Amino acid sequence: MWLEKTIQEIKKKKELKYIDNEFVKSLLLEYIKLNKIKLEGDFKKLQRTSQYKKMFKEIRRQCRTVYGSFQDVKDSRNREVYERIFNEVKGNSILDIGCGEAPLDYLSLHKEKTYYLTDIDTSTIAKIQKYIKKNKIKGKAFTYNIIAEDIKLLPKADTVLLLKVLEGFEAIKRDITFTILKELQAKKIVISFAKIALGKNKKIKKSGRQWLRKMLNKLNYKYTIGDIGKEIFFFIDKE
Image 1: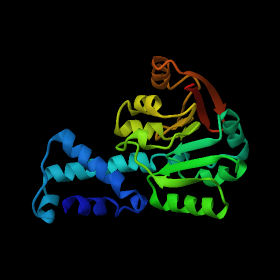
Image 2 (image 1 turned 60 degrees about the horizontal axis):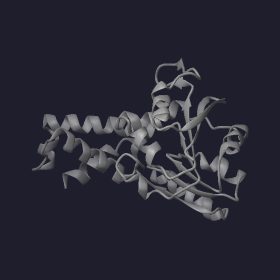
Image 3 (image 1 turned 135 degrees about the horizontal axis):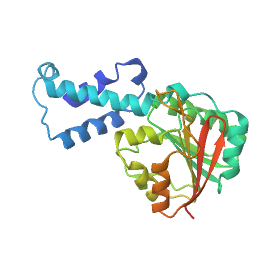
Image 4 (image 1 turned 180 degrees about the vertical axis):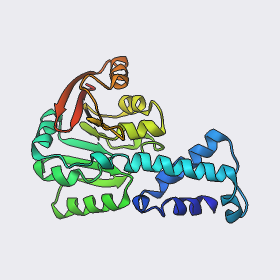
């Protein structure tokens, strides 16, 4: 009972209203497991305990990190940027993880492809699914939590997009990027980062992201880097 009520309390913040319940639940259960705590009894009394307050504050922070940390760099990409991205795309199927509303800008550019679009925002997914159906685009949009759910459950796609999301994932689960890169079933992976560091107003150089370069070298994946618009792109070949 306390779990469901805690999820409701976390989602009372306006910016977290549409975050997927299962995503919040997975963060709560992982926190309890890692910190080896027990939470039981009357919910109102539980809310007043120091360990509950600490947990609540941390989980809400994590939700904001993944769900809302990219708001300051949320500028829409123009058509030219998407054309550059699609020039690197392999095959006819695309999986966009943590897509946000970006598909609404690019789905009409290449209607011949099949799209699998995931996010933790239920409202966004509903909007994209409606667009897909209305415009008779092949594929589907669905909620998915890459932090807790098995990556192998994702549909196999020729190209996977991870655009401005990895830093948020890493903030919740360190080195999850390595697992994602290794387990994704794809020929090509396209990763991007905002040029401006979040909250620091500091420009990121093209030569940066050494942590990602080390992972790619360890996995023996070939890659090229592009400076496009307001982002730095890594175009990675798995095959």
